[in-house]
Image (tube, rainbow, N blue to C red; front, side, top):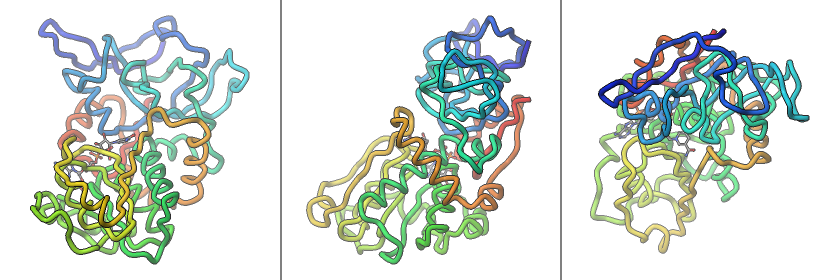
Length: 329
Ligand code: NDP
């Protein structure tokens, strides 16, 4: 028997979480069983922990947790054997399939990645989907020509999970980083991660009638979307790229095409969920190499399974700073 945080629908049709002891026979089908050590909390986990499942959870009872890291306990797949350390992010695990908020998971071997050399399971979950996606976003900017010395790189939602890791990676790679935050009290924290400029959220969260403003940013990792992304597009330097990662500020995009046509600005879509295996390996290797572990540790808040309902509500309100690491044991 082992512990799992299970979401079940109540008589009112709304779901709530309880920690229960369940048996391995209750785990879903799959060819690898993993003893989970750590999981984490992303924005999407907040949605899956909410009473309506954020439109992501199809069936109840459900175990949320879109990320986990741990040790293979048994495997029917040649690529993995008992004792291997593994990490899982994405593939709709924790949404459509049972996820990481439990002491064990049974999954499809295709979804796993060997834990990269140099990272512990705890560090891998300090990274999690948020950090993995930040690295995909930085790689996309580099693939489109971004190099240090071209000007400041903007990170929106900077004190959140994606934003914190993006800030630390970019600063470590030698970029000048400007962080947008709605929480002025996070200024010291963002500077400790390497941001040299703090942009108050209110400076960017209003639309303007001007499709182009002063050319300011050489690149951008955007976790916010909505009006802020529209505004940022008009402030990009000639030929600059924005990696669109998130929608913490809204899914709309009230923009014009002028920045694309007159400044050759690129809007790059970043998806971490269905990311092909080879690029996953590349991103995890880059994380082990380019994300300073002391900075990662400075952004981590530890938690246990019982903290998750509250943390889920907090992250949806933009109240979680940095990254949460959940010790499921
Ligand atoms: P967090 O909640 O940790 O971070 C989001 C940050 O955005 C907040 O901390 C806050 O930063 C800022 N923010 C929140 N609300 C608003 C608002 N109304 N207007 C402007 N800024 C706001 O979430 P994550 O970092 O885990 O995820 C960020 C986004 O990226 C989410 O939308 C998530 O769904 C998406 N995402 C997408 C992935 C993909 O594959 N494309 C993968 C992972 C995440 P501050 O306090 O500094 O202002």
